[in-house]
Each structure stands twice: as structure tokens, then as C-alpha cells.
Picture (cartoon, rainbow, N blue to C red):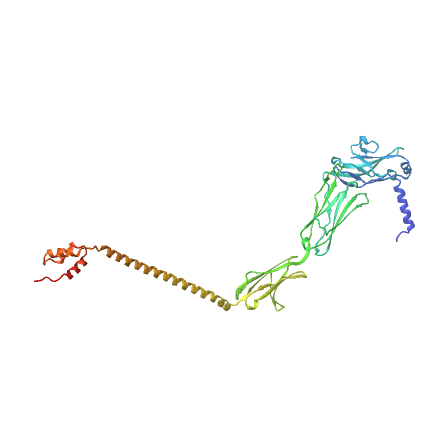
Length: 430
């Protein structure tokens, strides 16, 4: 049974009264700072109700201690010359706001810090609630939300979070890669304990080109003395589902191909998830006739296979058709008829070559024989030496009638001419 509203209001008033009777500081339990940059510590406190007037009507100062409540001050608003840490109270102590900004926080000062209130009217109190401040030479990396599988065309929304240690030197968030079509929106939010967080939201439409590509978020923290500190970026790899694209059909050989030979068709396509089914069709006068399935198709072609062939790539419920690839099949008889003129030309060429070779051979043979005959005739005429017929005749007359041709053969260099001479001599008278 729910309590009546007056009872609830009374309980709340009693609780507020109890709380107002205690000393309490409200601080974050833990903070992270960047060495060399400023750090803003959100702080609020409560005092007993009887002390509130003393705080409002008195001049109060804030003091910070490190390590323990009773430790020496590291920062005192009233004694800045003795401070080991430089800063200022940015909150209004009269309104119980003790928020403090430390300038150029040193990296060797990581510890738990406690706040002390000190007023001129002798109102002094060390608050036992502390804040653990961890100062790093390098700031923490940003946090990036992740998304699961998205379908091409869906809106993708990524968020990058980075702590804001100091509102006077806020960080800057950058998305990579840069795309003019992407939309970015950045805002700073403050939690109940006073910590600030910068959130950058990136929105874009998913496409097939984004699949397996990374989107990164980088943060830059400015330093008090100039420059900046950059932690490692946060990265997320996109997983985009998309249907088949770039589907292409190819033929393994040039056309035309002889009838009865084997040809291979190949289909390629890109999809996520990968293509699960390839189907082949032959285009017959505007109609499709299935010829097989699979990424490759091997056909022993006939005349009916001539024409355009296409493949269909299917992934899940999406599909894409390739451009047609044309197959031309030539018949065997046609091939022989087409080859006949080339064969006839080849035979004629061989006959011509043989005729020329034989003619050259015969010419060279006859020329050789004629040259040999001419040499023999030249040698015959060269061996003949002219002699005086009168002197020979007189010599024969002086030897008498008993002389025989054989006795005088050695006197003549040409026996044939001698015989002819004897035949022409007149008969001897008795």
C-alpha cells in the first residue's frame, strides 16, 4: 500500500533536516587529469544549519590537502605564495560551492585530495570525503560505441566519448576518415557528481564501400603552456551487408569455337555475405533457358549453344545479373569448307616451288654440260700445231717408196693428220 503524500513530504523534510546537521563534501570518487593541463575539481559541501549564517556573513577561503586530512596544504586560497600547486576557487563558498581549478597539474601529484573550509569567524572544518586524482602524462583514449551488422542504406550512428578535465581548455574530437556527407554533432554533458564528458555523434548512411573499413575517433587535449596531448584513437570496423554487385560473366576462349569442343564460362560477383548461388542461362529470342549452376560452367558445345549467355548471382534475397557474353559455334563441315581455299593455295605454292627448283636444276645441268663440251673443243684445237705441207711432202719423197708410215710416226706430233696425208699422196709409177 502506498504511503500518503503528506507522509512522504514529512519524511523528506526530516531527512533534509538530518542532512543539514552534518558536515559533508560532495566530490567525485575518482578523476583523471592530463599532466601540464588544467584540472577542474567539482566540489560542493553541506554544513549544519546553525553554521550557514556564519558562512554567508563571513569571508571564507578554500584549502586543499593531499594524502590525508591532517596533511599540510598544497593549495591555499589565502596564502598563494606558499602553494605547491597553483589554482583558484571557481565556486562561490557562500553558496557552498567549493569547485576548484588547478592550473598545469603536475604529473607527480597523483593522490587523494581533501577540502578544508576556513572562515574568518573561526568556522573551520576538514571534510573527510576525498577525491582520488590520477594525473597521466598521456590522457586516456576515447571510448567509441560499436555497432553490429548493418544493411546497406541503413543509418549508422557512432558515438565517441572523452572526459573533460577542464572546461576552460576542453578537448577536441576528430573523426577519420573525413566525408562531407557524414554529419557530426558534439556536446558536453555533466553527471550528478559534476564530471564533464564530451560526446561526439557521427551519423551516415551505410554503403558497400564502407564494409570492412575502419572509422576512428581521435581526441586532442590542449596544454596550459601551449601544444596538445593526443592519446591513441579509438577504432571501429564496419560490417555492412550488401547484395551482389559488379557481377561479370567471362568466356575462357575466343570465338568462334568448333562444334564439339569444351568451353568454360566463369561468373564473378562481390557480396556480403558471399554469393551462395550462381545460375547460368542462354538467351533464346528474349527468353531464358537454364544451362547450369555454379561459379564455373563447362559445356561441350553444339550449334544450339550459340548465342548470348548470362549468369545470375544470388546472396540471401538479393540478386544481380551479368552482362551477356556471346558464344559462336562453328560446324565441322563448315570448318573444312573454310579451310579448303587455304589448302588449295598451299598445294599450288608447293607445285610452284618444285617447278622452279626443277627448272633451276635443269638449267644448271645443261649449262655445265655445255661448258665441258666447249672446254674439250678448245683443248683439241690447242693441241693441233700447223706444219708446212710442202716440206713434209719433200721429206717423204726423199726417203723412197719403201718407207712405211709406222717408221715415221714419231716425226709427227699428230698421227691423225699423218694418215690423212698418206691417203692424199698420188700413186707411184712403175
